[in-house]
Amino acid sequence: MALSKRDYIIPSALLNKTFMVHANDADFMADQVAYLSMQGFYRSVEINPITDKSKRAAICKCMGSSGNKLDRLTVWCSYYLRSHKLHLCALDEPMRLEAVEAVKKLCAEAKETGATAIGFTCGADVGILQRSECYRSLINSVSEIADYAAKQQLNLYLKPSDNTKERKILSLSSDVKELLDLVCKSHHNVYLCFDTSHVALNHEELNSTLDLFGNQICNLHLSNAVLDYYNPQYGSIHTEPGEPGFLTSKRAQLLLEHAYSSGIGTEQGLTVAFDCTQELKPGHNDKRCFELSTDFLKQVFLEFILNS
Image (cartoon, rainbow, N blue to C red):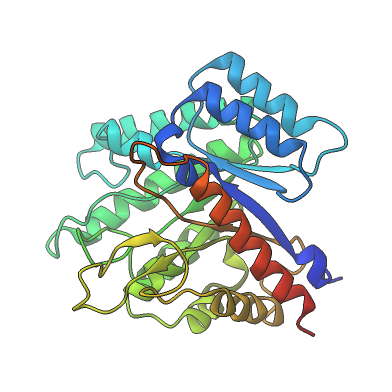
């Protein structure tokens, strides 16, 4: 039976983005998860890998405690892979295997954190002459990680990018769809994280792209971007909602309406976060981005629930 509109949206705190300057601070993140576990709004959190074993245990305790609504936790490995120069689509087999083993280790640590999913973006495109081999490497890597993640009872989220800056191997939705269809034939724990800014910057229509993936989408990142090529901020993602970007609360509400009416995630719910970061300057409130994200999500969800 499909969920009601009130239960359909699973609000998610994208802590590694809204608190970007603290994204790899285990103490700070453990405190934030503990705080959110006592609040009534968020039901999901998204963080970077936690290196401190005791902090992983503390977060896991928060996730499993009775009486709170937090029951989903995603660990994003993108920053770790990038900072360690690890490439899951590497053409050199030893390099590819090194990246796979690193993510497997992060899977095990994510499980200690109480995670329900692990996710990552993928490496840079290598050019037309080697692209097919690059995809083959990526498919092998995703399949091997998905096998390991399944043993840890973890879902695996893939997050594509866009083509406005350095081209990534996973970008255009047609390519992502083909890869997902291949992998999901034998791995049922692999899903897409749908990011509105990346889709829009690739000049793809949001609703039809949602329909293309359907229930392969498990996680939705509402993210703003400036689409006007001649605007100095063109391609700048993770901005505040509204102009000069395209994402308003009304546009976000209509996107959720379309997802719900199309039956995307209506059996288990759709995890939704607002992906926004800020440059922290002296004297700035480092909670401002988190507070802005929370207010925006509440406004969108209220409009979504009240619209009959």
